[in-house]
Image 1: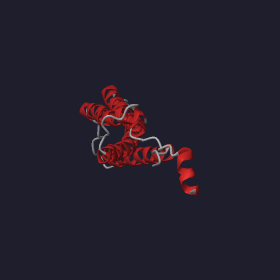
Image 2: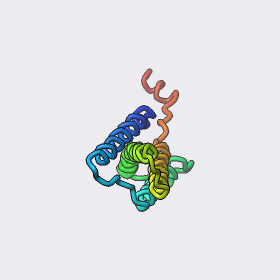
Image 3: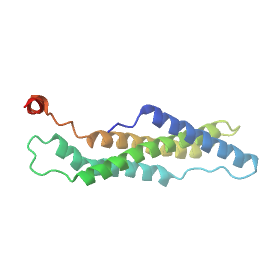
Image 4: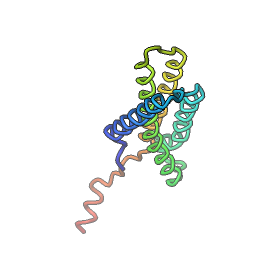
Length: 157
């Protein structure tokens, strides 16, 4: 298993910023109202970051426990890992989108403070989702099994 790469997250963030920023600019050029992310968007992303972490916690406990009394279901761990990877990529794209909206509002002649607060909260929520997902992804990684010298001795026989 490979962890989510920083380059992948950067590509999604840049793509999100470009698409949303250009979309805002095109809407303004067509005379439409600019889209302001609601406060609930940032709150939902914060909540999702916490949910991903809480789903990964039992897997982490299973991985770090010295005495393996009860192993976690491997399918559960895989599903949580996939959710964490998807959340990391989504969080980076949404963070980029929030940056695109923020740049759009900052480039206007009149800056609306409530809109910037809303964009800042959306950016915070997206970053928390991405960070929580990256932590959850690390928690779901089982360490490689140590076959050590026993496996090599068995091969010589």
